Amino acid sequence: MSRATALVSTRGAGGTESGITELPARRTGWTLPQAYFTDPGIYRLDIERVWRTGWLFAGHSCEIPEAGDYFLVELDTDSVIVVRGDGGAIHALHNVCRHRGSILCTEPCGHVGKLVCPYHQWAYDLDGRLLAWRGMQPELDKAEFSLARVAVREVEGLIFINLAKDPSSFDAAAACFGPLARPQGFVRAKVAKAVDYTVRANWKVVWENNRECYHCNVNHPQYIRANFDHFNADDTTARIREDMATVVARSEARWSEEGLAPSHTETGMTLFPDAARGIWFSANRTPLVDGWVSESMDGRPVAPLMGDYRDTDVGTLRMRALPNFWNHSSSDHGVSTRLLPLGPELTAVRVWWLVDAAAVEGRDYDLAKLMPFWQLTSEQDWLICERQQKGIHSSAYTPGPYSTFKEYNVEGFVRWYLEMIRGA
Image (cartoon, rainbow, N blue to C red; front, side):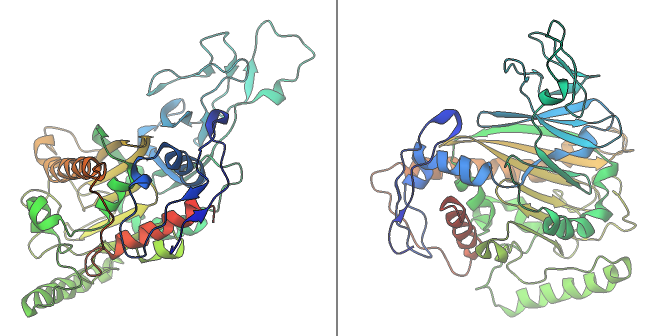
């Protein structure tokens, strides 16, 4: 944008005004001005125009295998129950009793036979229908008091929710994720470990950091041993091109018979080119460096094969969805990351490690070998993000130019974000 964009002041959750009548101008190809990362009014716009309108990654279907299993997703003032119904379907329901507004589920996850309000014991079926309301006058109609539903879609074991009253279509994302995720077998997986973090940075700082590997050579010593991402568009040496050509040719030859041919073979392997055109999802299968078959510390498998894989050498499945999900999966394990905003300068992050459901800890896998690759990479990133957030506060901060060689994905994300926040 060459000038400030005029906005109508918006009313957020609880009827509070955002206070924003104009967005600060942003120079194309440069980082966002300070206010986008610190201003409470812009944060309210983020919640209303990005987070309450988009499809959000909630969790994995393997976390709720039986009817009555549930977990909560907390976004701003909304608490959403994601629960397995009696017929196997997954439901998403606002965690708010229709009587006087009490929270129904007080624990972050668990198992229930019915959803019972702890205040006056109104009882709901797992699909949200009101079943019982002792002491209420008989002329009232139970059918009018079901729990408020939230749009939910599952694709190959990945659960997404949308809080909008009129959600956008999820079909294109399902068509993208489905074929690539199916061999991974998330529907037949289990969570080996999940770790929660509170990152002292705006959610956009965290997302931007994930969209480039400009920082990888210095900050992620274990990651660069396995991946080509740190070789981006300006790395044109013959050795690098030869190494990549060898790996791609080997991968194409070995994977094609399994229907797993690499779908991304350029040096900029974290590409999300469609973000700049308003497309919020992307996925690809990417070769690893020669000699590596898993994103582990030494490149060797750390768990049994997942899903339909018959060979350890399948590269990495990479999936991402704005504004809150990315996943890297090797043949033996998958790692999912979810962001949820906690405030203008706080982001809740959960990282899951998934393995085949039949794998037994201590026999088939060891957390001390399964976790370090992505635990280190993640925690290195959180430190980077917190340092950046602190620096953005400085009176000396001014936007800087993105590298056209290494930060093109960040520019794509920012363009998408600005379209969203402008209400497009």
